[in-house]
Length: 308
Image (cartoon, rainbow, N blue to C red; front, top):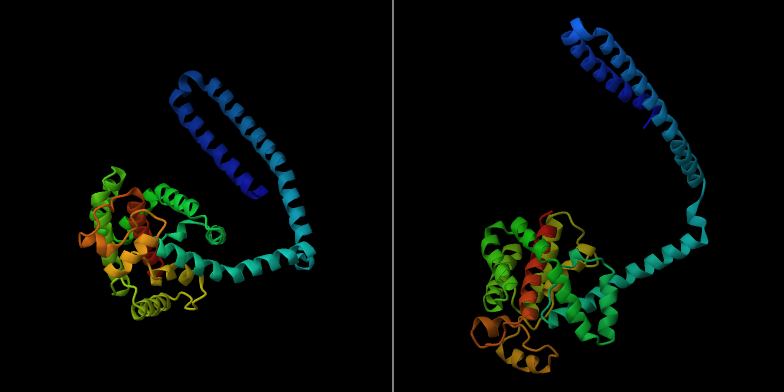
């Protein structure tokens, strides 16, 4: 705040108090004019004292900030060894991000997870990368279940914003999940996810065919370009969305899933075909329900990125 602004503010306040006092004086003038004058003089003195107090308190702070700014501007920070080391560390981290993301996306998709990583810091990829390297499967599973549970309200609001026509159905499905009715939540959300994906790039989501996955990649980049996002496959926007083109246990056909489910460390893994064709009678677990909610959240993030 400058001294001029401070004066203006206090002058405006003082004028207002004077106006109030004058209005009251006109009404009560015949009987208490001397008292009104005394009140007005007191108000003026208080206002002037408060202005001086405020200015005297603020001025040293302004002087300190100004002096600090001058000192900082005089330093060529780029030549400091500590700053150089920081830049090198950041550069290395940035170079490694695509590798982390590729590994994490491939692993999670095979476990039936499509995650709205826009809700998490980028550093989570490095964390999960090393958890995967160390085969900490149970910790990853528990972390993801907790992450989605804590963000259900955000995902619900994202659906309302990004896919308002589907909100009624998806909201009812999320309520079913919250009530522990996973028999209803899972198949409904799997079906809605396919429709949402079709709205995004006009393709079915549930396919592991190489040609389909390549076409998904092409269309994602095409949509990013249309909305003036960087189209490089190393751009952060694409890296966060590219999990949609990963092979997944969710997509597998009957024969593929018969083999995968016996090899998976997850009990009753999620598979769209097995569930919607009535072959899986034990799919209704909280883990699978959270996977479908996570997928919905990820598709909302995708729509937000592709439409902004």
